Image (tube, rainbow, N blue to C red; front, side, top):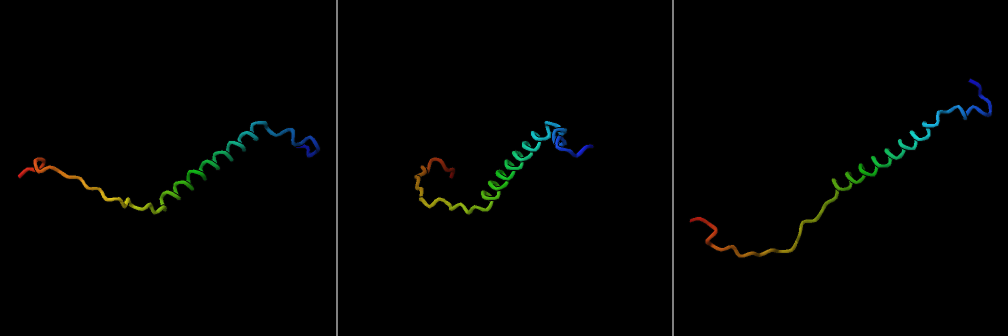
Length: 62
């Protein structure tokens, strides 16, 4: 294979598209992986508002 100035023209055209596709897949995987890691380690506080509800006695069997 000649290594002259025109040697880069022999590269298959779809190789550049495959490289771009690989980068896009890697970026998406890192995005979802980072989101999963963030949500799995996030200490979400419990709700602090008090809820009071009156339940009628007729609902409970004796």
